[in-house]
Length: 331
Image: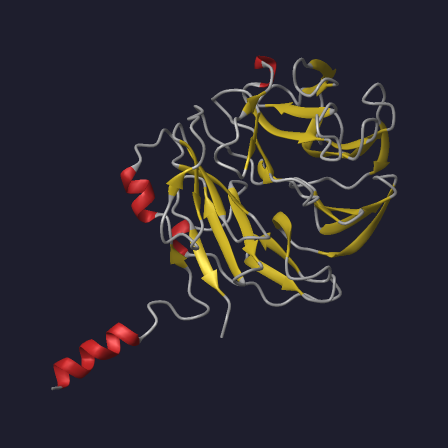
């Protein structure tokens, strides 16, 4: 009788309590013979909760049930892997269901769709082997685009025809950029031995000239929320307005690595730091104590990704080569 009651208890008890990280891509990774890097990127459709992941040399897979089951997304199987956290992204304006993916040691930048039946578009071969790509999401043709060449002295590539061709905008650039419209963009400037401070540069003429607008040093790709651009920099979180012309410090943030990732509303943000995931519900006026990442990740590095699903109130975290971990936050 005791054995029967124990078996019944195991059947009805939840397998994971709120506040526990759980791996959700174990079977997918075991099934697919990935290239170097394994699981290399994750993005969440905030409207539906659909998960998208990139597997090295195996392409994109999606899950509509929080990682319980997975299926290949689209017919194309691009070589290479995503690497820089955030370089696999969905349209942040929410106006389209386009997906942008920059692969390292693989093919060119890819513009796809959350609709698996829609054909993928590949940009010019010159933007192969890039860390990230920024496009004009307000333009259906994405004519103005910037891409950052991997391990090439901070080489910035520029396109004015939607990625059909690229020119070199120069070296010395850094981590991240954002394109606001056909003429306006901001890009990080690299901190180097020759230049003690990096900063943020802005163009208002389609990339012909870039002028400094901030001396803070970005540490991750910027994130757009409504008409404001948020950028994690060394020691702080910045908020840019007027298409990147003006910048203000939102709050101090110690040892930030990635974010912010937006939560349920405009005041709800998550940031990944070396100590774990920190959260604010008052737009950065105060931050909760960090929630440690899974011990299997062996800490947080520049290759650690963070995502949030507002539909199910769950966080996702991974590091290139790890499993994908989900943290259900419901009580």
